[in-house]
Image (cartoon, rainbow, N blue to C red; front, side, top):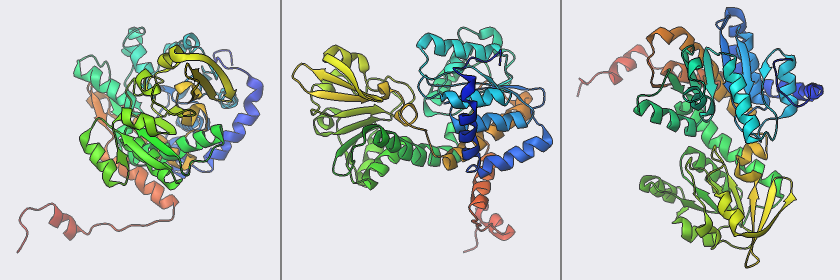
Length: 418
């Protein structure tokens, strides 16, 4: 307990109930845990985990510990840490540096404590830990065998480091695995974003005009769920190919300034900054709702909103009202941070089962292949992706075909008989 920085250890029983609940719904990770317990692949290895600290992440940490690792964990967002879950992890023997609603200084201090535990492997979400290892804690980087990155934003930061020749250790882009982005980004984000919006606002979605900024895999999931809830969906994009895809998927691609006049609910999922700014706020309807599902709180420009407002107040938990000079009111959810985590419980357990199985197996891959890896960004090996998919199918009671030897030879040959 002395090493950890948490709010209240007495909250642990409630956190344990949450962790035990998600464990029942994460069959893939349960199978991996059994294997780790038998083989102890991480014995003597320190692993630092920086992912949204809620029950599903906590269970990943416990699976790594079951494999012999000494695990330290912090949250990757000041508003997504659940204090009862953090307390439960401390009681299970994991070093925890995180609490809900941390200030910027506290959040950074938590990450520095995580790094100062001198990890051999890093599992990051958004790239903040890796950033500190390349700036303020460079002396700790030499010990690191490698790491894994959970999100699109984090992978973009890693590729920028690699391109500049500055990446100090190998990283696996877990986000880019099929079993991650096809399911976590699309179905997980789609469902958890709307869960967060609906539980926060208690408003109906059917009949409203929803503007989804960004049509990557996360944007596709958000738009698809909005359509299923009965909304009219507009998509804003900077990529013409994705805009055509949105059009053919039944949505209306549009310039963001045009969309600003029409939307009732605006959701950003781009990974970029200043997606909606003052010039958009000037055009928005009275009562428009703004929220973000990208990793950092820079997509909805809050400083512009503050500057334009004559008054602001909290009108409901996780809803801030900004009254503009002409009397219009705009509403920002969860301070512009990740609405599905800052105002919700994140992705469903069954979805994170696959994503965190990828993390656990990728961490083991780094350990086993460290001598063969260079300082670059790697894709998740195909065999890991397929193993997670197979385990998931098995847990669902689904069995699929396999190719015969003759079929394998046929599809790998160029000289087919006519």
